[in-house]
Length: 247
Image (cartoon, rainbow, N blue to C red; front, top):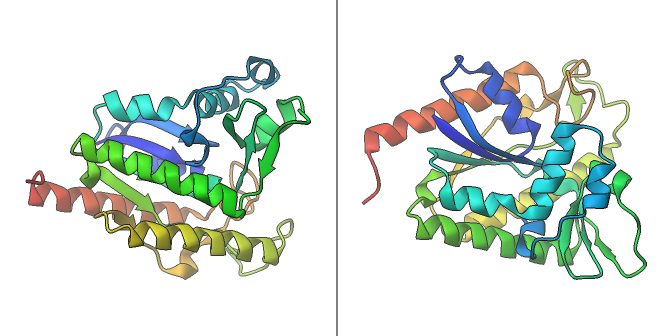
């Protein structure tokens, strides 16, 4: 299976549980919001030069260069898996009206500009940009006859760890706000009427692993969560093969 992921480690980490070489990731776009994809290309080379991690620098560059659109237009892929965990980031509008996802990596590297504007992740302004970016993606996939390849990974922030304890470094109020915002986006996607497939979960499966390789966070889950992701993805793929290509 050839897979494009637009989202976060939530989706990427699940692929590690797959049979080796059964899934090929042909594009991975993290630290990015659909809201930022609505603007023109504007690459901040000065900020990028300060990001020491090659991976983090690459993700920020992809957000700035809007490389996702080129991949969707040209790549050969079986599924586009989207998760919205990285929509937790605010959006920065530069003095030139370009939009960047204000990921932690970009925020620590950029030089502040008095003429820039920051739209918080839960703001109406960001949601308006986000809806525009989502619609642009649906249009592009539709033009390529690939809407049936879109899958939304309906994930949520975990409120507790594997033992059922509250997370030590994340306030419960922040988790509630994040999950409310995720539901707002999921509801919008479903109301658009496009035949979008969702990967669904029992809500109690979202438990944070405090020993996760990426550290503690409400979206760094227990292994059971990732295995469920992979299982649902495989069921979806098997079902699609039985149905055959859309008319």
